[in-house]
Image (cartoon, rainbow, N blue to C red; front, side, top):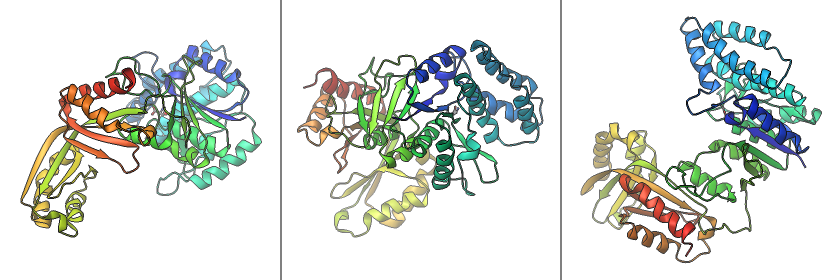
Length: 439
Ligand code: ASP
């Protein structure tokens, strides 16, 4: 059995957290490859080291004095080193960083030092070899992640190392220039390492015990999701369920490697398993509920639209020409509605409307704003009768007016449009009917 273990910033924010992580790794010899993030927040008002690095580099780039800012960053690491009782001295590392900041090595380089230094400390603490991600994670000339080159570079290095620490979040171009993934990207590194080492499990350790059925800011102490498929997760992440970087599932998904989300502060909790496919039914018919506010619906009406070939294409063309992506397009006999993000659409609405007139000669165009979309996701819905009925009667009881319904042909999700102000009440009503009442 081989595992990759990735630890998020809050799991590595202090020496105390590092010790918990050390205990977790040492308690299971199959936890062989460790991917650390940079130190995160120690408390809610704290600053992540990554953000400190960006701010410090901004000073350097503006030719301002950054020594105090860099000293503060160093203090975070020195505190961890001291708390762990290590004899590690970061003098030469910080000299190099200072020089490179002065030479304007770039904000990606700057941000990557958070993970790089934490990786050095982690390797020293565990007695594992350190592999610099810049040597094994490759980006192509266009700045895209180069999966094939990375896989072969990384595979070769890991074959020579039974145990290793590979810092998260960054890699490099062929010429060695450092490049980072987007924020939260250590999750992606974990997945890349898991794939290259062909491990059995990718454990992703964070500060919550996995995914919850609904957002805890809306539902008090929501139930945990024990098992979720990659496809369900895509639907929920897209609709705003956080925890894991959305791109991190791709490398492992191709290899059929499951991800287990775990809690560093409650290691006994089983967490959430993310799998390709499963015969296990989810506990509550639905797997999860997620949603977002801030959508607009553009209703286009035209008699006989249904028989006009190419009508839908022309409608979408008007959005494409204005660089706006659409979310959903429910349609009737003589109407078609396009859901878009309000903040993207707002500035371009008149240009879209005139383009729609030009391309489709509609009878009328109406715009509704301040709408929310809610996705009710679950592999179990396909085989359960009455799911939609239960959702809509729950919403009716909660006095929520449903503005749009869209069920994907995969029967994996039902998307519901409601007014922004009904968003929380709608989620509560759906949660109650499936999780609390379980009728
Ligand atoms: N440290 C980086 C960030 O704050 C990457 C990560 O933690 O995954 O975004």
